[in-house]
Image (cartoon, rainbow, N blue to C red):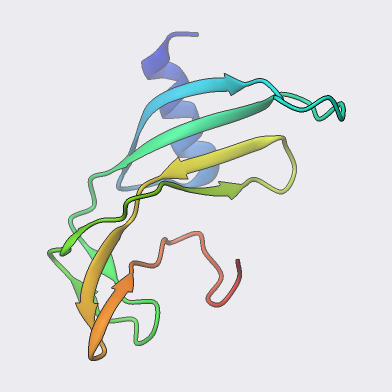
Length: 107
């Protein structure tokens, strides 16, 4: 399966409308604890809309990209979705945008 086909399959499986799959990598464990290798699915946001996690307001523009990428784990597999979210100006300060698959308040 080619990279584009794999990306399309992942978008359909996880309902990632508005995101493009940049790459799929395998990250080997660096510790000796026997942790298995994990799959990293790196995404690029092409939605053009960013949602405040506090009030839910939608913004067309972000202020800047966060300095560190974030990972969200798929519950059933050793797979992580990786993305660098944007900061938005809302609710009297700056907030890290909420992703569509996030449960509010969950880390």
